[in-house]
Image (cartoon, rainbow, N blue to C red; front, side, top):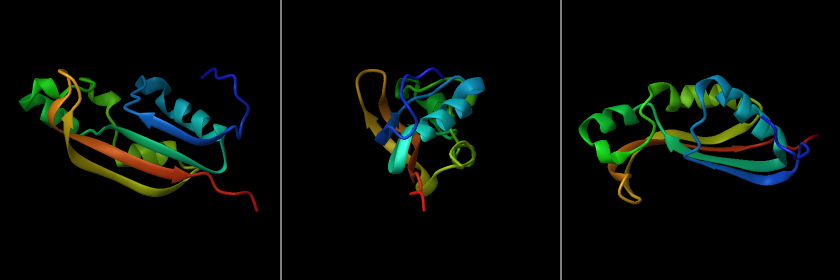
Length: 118
């Protein structure tokens, strides 16, 4: 990932429905974690692996169609081992976001903090 920011640049990074290609996802997540300042927060909301079942019954729910682009809690734990995870869950949600994101689906929420240096 090419970002022109030095490490420890941001107080907060939010990844909202940022579904990366599977072969680069973990590297992107790890790079983004290095950009947080000590004590900084990372917030992520994205479609979970369970979302694929909702897509089968409602094509208007949107989200990536390839399972490898969807997230599991375990996957996110592995991607963000350098952060302290304070909240991580997969949950059903009701989406009303334009014509292509209507109905009930499944998302994953992550809230994590970069540890302060001693």
